[in-house]
Amino acid sequence: HAQTLTEMHRAKPRHLAAEYAAQFGDEEIVAAYRCRPPYPPETFVILEPLLGAHPRLVLEVGAGTGDFTIGLAPLVDDLIAVEPSRPMLERGLRRTSARHNHVEWLAIAAEDYAFDGRYSAVVAAEAFHWLDWHGVLPRIGTSLVPAGHLILVERTLAEPPPWDPELRVLIRNYSTNRDYVPYDTVTELE
Image (cartoon, rainbow, N blue to C red):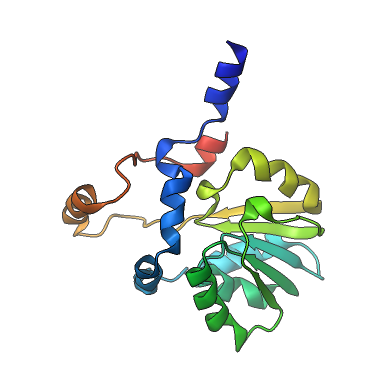
């Protein structure tokens, strides 16, 4: 009976299952990322003091197409961007290689990464919810320098756009994730 309670306690919401995360390897989903709004410049102003003293070695897990990587790279000395989706990684690499030669892209899932460095920060921008929390959190914790931070970033709007009701209907009718329920990553982790 205790094992069942432990398993239930450790369970992630069904809509965050690996089968849904795997959809981010689809070329059409990757192409749609160009329509996402950019991270506001204020994001990086808030983030900068959390990165610690120089030299700053930062690991970004679930780096996607580089939306966050582009703003993060100028703030750090070395950045390792981990991304399991080959199409996303390739787009991120193209977007960052010309301006940021200190960004190393690795085609690997965070769960399979060695966490062999001493990072001033580990960052996940709209990606941590897809990871195996119980597997990676202890490894992240031991890979951070003293006073290092795990930084979770989410893009949210202060107010829903005027077309939000119509958008919700479209999502409800056409989403491939039929298990989705609203959630908050930090609440789930707690």
